Length: 225
Image (tube, rainbow, N blue to C red; front, side, top):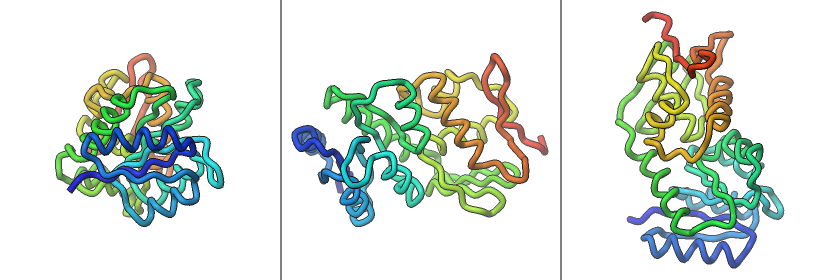
């Protein structure tokens, strides 16, 4: 069965163009042109991937991404005309897994989509545990102190990398290599933003295992090591 991609894009020409390329690549593709119908279709179809424009009528892409991220860990690639670094970081910070700026090469969109899906599926099927943090790599479920925590695919990849490399100082470049197989089209500040969000999500009772090692990177501290 082919992967299903939901394209939420208000520009009909772009949406249909992207749909054609996904179908040529072997995907099943659905298109909608506003945020409210995008949310309804995401809930109905449970797609394998969502291509999401930021500027949407009825419900903008930012709010839609936030809602989707609260409800599921479906991979989300933002497609937008906003190219400022701050906008890019914001998109990743609210839970998107990748961010592509218009105008774009459709082959790049397919390549990014394939990479995101591969990261999701190539995880080792095991449960990682450190202190009161548990990560099921098969389902993507994360709990802290037995409470469920909603993380994006990028944040799950970072947390898994930290948990597999306890008490080691990992530079930003090393984190990108280990977590994303060098496919993360980001930069230092984007990684910093993802880690800042991850820290907030896993912080409990003032305990913060992810430490900044100034000038070097980050370290995941395991108390009982």
